[in-house]
Picture 1 (cartoon, rainbow, N blue to C red):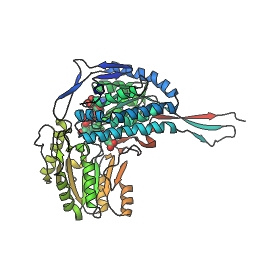
Picture 2 (picture 1 turned 45 degrees about the vertical axis):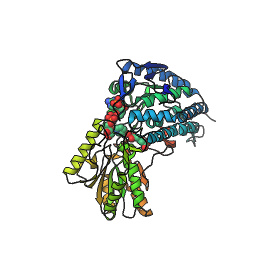
Picture 3 (picture 1 turned 90 degrees about the vertical axis):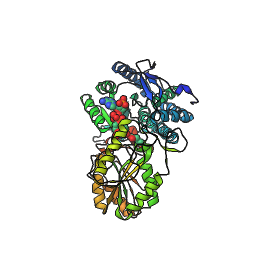
Picture 4 (picture 1 turned 120 degrees about the vertical axis):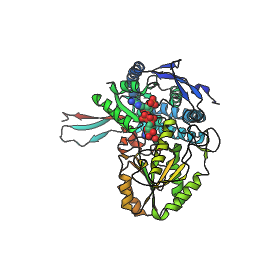
Length: 482
Ligand SMILES: NC(=O)C1=CN([C@@H]2O[C@H](COP(=O)(O)OP(=O)(O)OC[C@H]3O[C@@H](n4cnc5c(N)ncnc54)[C@H](OP(=O)(O)O)[C@@H]3O)[C@@H](O)[C@H]2O)C=CC1
Ligand SMILES: O=C(O)CCCC(=O)O
């Protein structure tokens, strides 16, 4: 039961207007039970246009406020998210499936971006540059980019919004958001709290409805100056293409294929713990999840046994039940992908050490799985599984594992465990990824720049770099100073 039922609002926000769901609305279901949670309206191009227009008007007034004024409102939004964290976590678990404790973790993680960028709002400094002529002065100022469109995924229905809206609003931008179809209620609840915090009307719209129609208006609009997207690489590429005619600034957080390397000299228990955190966070449905676990020959069997033994103690179940560590996968498509990767690997010689099937609970619950004897020719080596399958590859030499790790179109997160400082530096420098976890399976935090290279995307979120993504640099050249 929600303490504040008004947070589960069956309406979308277009400018200042809440549009309630009617009988043409989109039904949102609980992936753990299949039960209906509620309905949101199915909006389209016209409402997206209206939201952009409202954003454009509101943004100019918002940008004219002082950074401190914006910061105070964002800080209030943060406080309200924290005050309502239990309700927000419950909504998140109901629509996404992750266990309640993990959902609460996401709410706090999501809130940390609002807090961080409320602070950063006041530190968007310009520059004074030594000039090239005696009568001239060069000054650089930073201004908000304007109206931003955001498209977010179902796997982190709260934090992927705050990681975008926090810096955008702090910088003086307005945002029109389209959340994922499966998880709109977390986005809507954030908008309710933003209004309560005093965020002026029009600055944050939440449009629910068919992705293509909404995306086409967002990407085609001259008024929208930036698109920020988290999701799959094919959709990111398509959106990039759609943004080309209006030359929008882009931030793309796309797919990953993270290697997780365990060297012979690693603290094995710590590596097992890190692998479970990295591989099984959100049941494997995270773009920074370990996708390929490379274990050096000398510790391969010991690591595999410890990993399987630990997994057998962790409960699969409805995220609302106590002690659940693994909730359901998001939908049947996710199950099909996991099964496809397991079948492909076992048909090419890999062995199942544990798991491998839909869980006895049925539905989209899947057994945590460990595969041994996995090799580079298997589909799981090159494609993101996005599910609870840990494939163990064996390797001998450092150079080999670095080459195998880099042999992918993706370049988001990577991890390795070693006690050797020189090796840590070398491998850290050689891995072609935007992020490297060394002796840790958890790298995400508001203070650090999150993002990838190659087909994993463009730009960085979080950290002091995150706000720069929503800013234009303007150079003022003062002449005639005699
Ligand atoms: N990097 C990451 O964090 C994520 C990666 N993925 C990867 O992508 C796979 C597929 O997941 P999926 O949810 O389908 O990811 P998508 O990339 O399809 O969806 C992400 C977001 O993009 C929207 N979207 C989809 N198509 C379009 C379009 N043509 N124009 C505008 N917006 C669009 C979706 O809307 P709607 O929900 O309405 O379709 C959703 O809001 C996963 O298995 C995983 O491998 C998925 C999610 C997050
Ligand atoms: O893009 C994702 O899959 C969510 C990122 C989660 C994180 O910030 O660690």
